[in-house]
Each structure stands twice: as structure tokens, then as C-alpha cells.
Length: 442
Figure 1 (cartoon, rainbow, N blue to C red):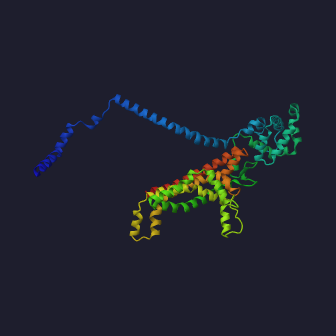
Figure 2: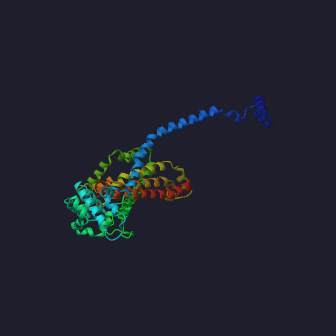
Figure 3: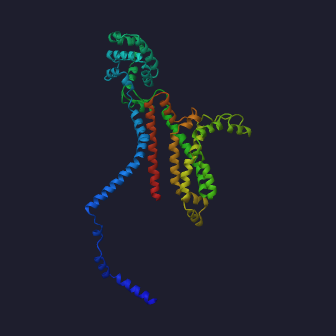
């Protein structure tokens, strides 16, 4: 047996000598020669690769179409509507053309006559209300003036308008001799305008073209600030409530963790409207919470909780809490517990080991959950509308108001665009800060 092992080793040494290796390599065909393809084979491989690419593209086409029609097209339409408003220009094209060169003082008689004639036409077609609503957004109080003047112009004949339209318009109401009213008509008559964005940030342009704060109530910047404050409060509450629960789920026995995870996922299986309605029953004046507090003697009269900012924060924290727990739980489950045990064995205290070892490792899940909760809460609409009242309204509710009630789609689009820019800016800041930190930790 020993002789056989010795002979085998001798043969292996002989075959591994440099001379023998060179001989074998010389005898064997080269890799380059063996791997060379003919032109026909190259063309066949190229056609096969193109066929696979076409098949892969066709499989992705439904997804791309869905993204385009459900995401790209609505955002592009919103961006376009925020700067394009041809409604007034289509209603009074001659007046808009006559006012194009006017800057100071009062417009000339041609502008008065053109407006009188077009106002008569709009009154006959019952479209003067559309013009009145558009001008009233720029010049409050002008809606009744335009509608009343339209009724007077309707009683005039075409010959009267053509011969004496400017004087008839001045006689209809003395306010038509105010330059500010004509300036508002000229502004709303521009098809492309930045007026919606100026209104969305509580700015307006003077007759000289200078920007200044609106003289009327400035509400939109306050709404943006309140929306960010509510979203930040909800995010902090979700962190405070979700982090301990996620930590317990990650370290609990599998059976208990599974049962608790079902309870965490249970809100996803319940309608959002049902959950919000349940909070209305809990928070109302004679609801469950006030009844319990009165029964145990903590309060003497019911608390006004419903239709407040607090109600919005409470209901939305309950709804968005799973979005914080799930990212944290997925990250905590992947952390090796031996890290903390090693720190404890080296003399570290439990809290010190948690703060310096475990918690930094959970930052990716914490940042992802915080970003998810914050972005969702910024654009939330249903819950603040049902439980928030006037004090708990957010910017999304004002956007819906202009879309559904005031029909000011341009302002709604501008507000939505600014909200989109705000969210993208926050995401960019998050990516710069948290992404750079993750790279350093990696």
C-alpha cells in the first residue's frame, strides 16, 4: 500500500514539472482558438440577444404604461395647469388683445368698447359668471360688479355697443373707472401666468411689477407650516411607540412574535374609512374616551378632542404606526445578537451597549420608517377631513377644496406642485445625510 502511494506521488510530481506542463499546454488547443466563433455564429448570438431584449421589454410594457398614465401624466398635467390658464383669454379675446399694451392709467375706449361687447355676449350665453369668478380671485368684490354689468349690457343692442359701448360701460358702474379692476382683468387674461404660484406663497405683484406680501389674509404659508408640524409630530410619536414594539417583536419567541405581528398587520386588513369613523366614536364629546375619564373622576366635563389638531395627530398616528414598525422590525431581525453580548462581556452596561452598538445598526430601518411616515402624513387627506375640523386641516384639504368647490384648478395645481417640490427636497436631504452615513458605516 505504501509503495502504491509512493508511485502515485512520483507520477503527480512528474506531471507537475514545468517541462511537462509546457508540453501539455503546447499539445492542447489554445482557449482563444477554441472560443473563436464564426461570423454566422456571431450574428446568431446577436439576434438571440435582441430577441431576449424584445421579450423582456414587452413584459415590462404594461408596467411602464401603468406608471405613465397613473403617475407621470397626472404630474405633468398638474405642472402644466399651474402655469397655463386660457379660460379668460378664450372668453374675452378682444379685451385681452386691447389690454396687451396698456400699462398705467385707464385703458383707452377701444378696450372699454371691446369689453362691453364681449360682456353682452357672455350674458346672452350665460357665461358671465365664469369670468366674474376668475376676476374675483384677483380682485375680491368684483364678482357682483361683473354680473350686474353683464345684465345691463344684455339689454343693449349691438348698435348701441358699437357706437357708444365705452360710455355705457362707465355709466353702468363708477367702479369701471378704477385702474385696479382693469389690471385684474389683464392679469387673469394671460394664458401663461405665475399668479397661481404667487398666490400659493401669499405673494402678489403690484402695478409696478414689484412683489410683496398679500394685503388680505396670508393663509397658505401658515398651512404649509402647520402641515409640516403635524407630520413631524406624527413621525416622532410613531418612533416613540413603534421602536420599543419592534424591538420586542425582534427578540420575542417566534410564536409570540407571530401573534403580535398579526395585530400589527390587522389595520391593513381594515378599511381606512372604518378606522377613521371608529376614532370619531372614540373622540367625540360623549364618546368612549370622555365617558371613561368622567367615570373615573379625572374630568368634570367632556373634553373637546374631536375636530381639533390633536384628533388628527392621534388618528393618523394609529393609521401610520405599522409603516414605522415593519421597517424597524426587518432591520432588527437581521442584527447579530452576539454584538451586544460581546459589548456586555467587555464590561459595557446594558444601556451603553444599546445606545452605542444596537441602536446605530437600526438607523437604516429608523430612517426609512421615518421618511415613509412623514411623506405619507404630509399628503394625507381623508383622516384630517373627517376628524380634524378647521384646526386640523392640512394643505391637502385645501387642494381638494380648490379642486372640488372653488374650481380654481390652477391654484390647486400650484399648491400641489409646491408640495411635491417640498417632499422631493426633503427626500434629497435625507438621501444626502442618511445615505452618506450608511456608506461610512458600510
